[in-house]
Image (cartoon, rainbow, N blue to C red; front, side):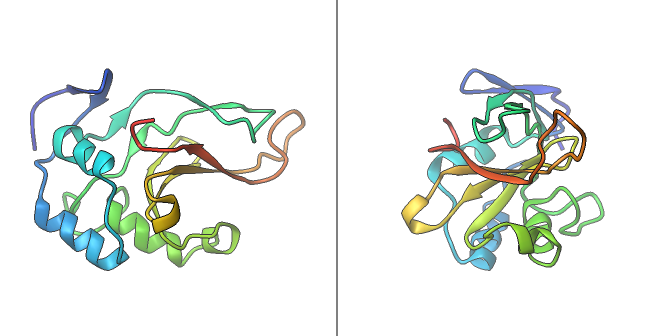
Length: 161
């Protein structure tokens, strides 16, 4: 792992730790999913695949909580225990298919790439017709004035967007 604390990617600071890009791990991920990663996301992984990206985005579908962040990035490859565990792209992809999320979100072709402190999830769309789009799943909070229902919504047309 790199000792760097931060790297810049397209004007945004990405926090570490950073792991070297492993093309074999990228190929294994694409093989298991059966779909290729978009060039913009692969470029991000190659140059700045860290663990933190502080930013906020506006989600019009979440009127009561329109600004969200997905700042905990999932990592390419294995974790420190040499497994595809929590926080790894392949581990999160596998787990998303066998949990309650699969009952609430159309997961075909979606790769979870980040989450926030409330366990809301950011997905990269790998389906051919919508390849590269980002979608968010935001959990409902059963409290007056907060999001009353789960929301699954498009966030951006591309990863760089």
